Amino acid sequence: MYNKSEKKGEELLNSTGDTGAAEEMYEHYKFTADPGQKPLRIDKFLSNRIENASRSKIQQAAEAGSLLANNIAVKANYKVKANDIITVVMSYPPREIEIIPENIPLNIIYEDDHLIIINKEPGMVVHPGYGNYKGTLVNALAWHFKDKPWFNSKDPRPGLVHRIDKNTSGLMVIAKTEEAKMNLALQFFEKTSTRTYQAITWGTLKEREGTITGNIGRSLKNRKIMTIFPDGELGKHAVTHYKVLEEFGYVSLVECRLETGRTHQIRAHFKHIGHPLFNDETYGGDQILKGTTFTKYRQFIQNCFNTIPRQALHAKTLGFVHPKTGEPVEFNSDLPQDFVKVLEKWRTYTASRKMDI
Image (cartoon, rainbow, N blue to C red; front, side, top):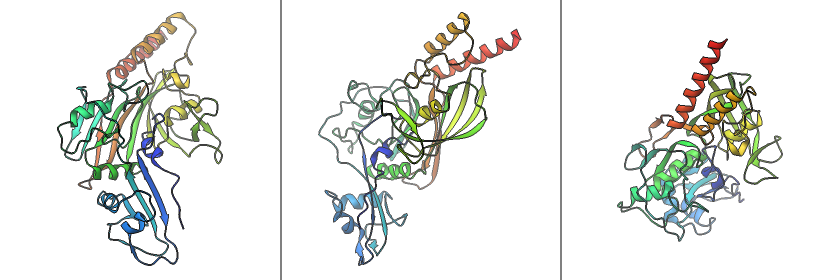
């Protein structure tokens, strides 16, 4: 019985919850052994079923903890038995393009021999693509890694296991070894990593804590944006938990915790409940959606838009199990200056309104 999983690399790549469209980085396969399956080494079992998958590549996945039998990590010499459920995550081979290293500063939060944590600045594209061939995070990583013996300049996404949008800031983990890359990829795929975001949304939410649920898929009218579909129809299941941190009358500061990781998840979910992210051009947040009609207020909002010329969304924390030590780790990041400044503007505005009253 052959059962190739439909949940392939797109979900891995988009596991930050606010990514754009991208090509897959990983192969995710799931097989169920036949009832009559005789004991067979798992690396041989998989090499017979996956095209162009060498036994050495499968052994690499096993070393990274990305080879599972019945949801338990196994070694390459594990003997597959009848009705076993076998899962494996492997990276696609590098493509024949060359990444040019560029000396672009990186805000490095943590680094060891296995991975690096960066706090991505707003406005930086993660990897080269149409219209963005230079100045990307991948170009910066290529410079950072260029003297390392393991660095491959033909790998279009060195170490990437997830990404965040150009105009979203915040934490990303980049793997330094193939074993770490596959191990982290599996954690993102299995949703065992933890991520929280902070966002400024339009309006005051009815509940200070809540959950937004709704299938997310590409709009049938505009493929560049995501939309919410009724459960059981189009799109993929998506869940966002939120907590209001601060209210400013016309906008709110919220913390979002992702249970799933779909493309533009936070942005699409808050649009769906009538609270688009502040200055999110794609989802209508770049218009004045709450407040007065006074000219002074409109000027204030325009000043805020100028202060944070992007969607107000920041990947604040990131947690996972370290691929080498097996210990849980969590990283926290400071809000970027544009986010901090616009919050200060709203706090001042709210305080002045209270004084007028």
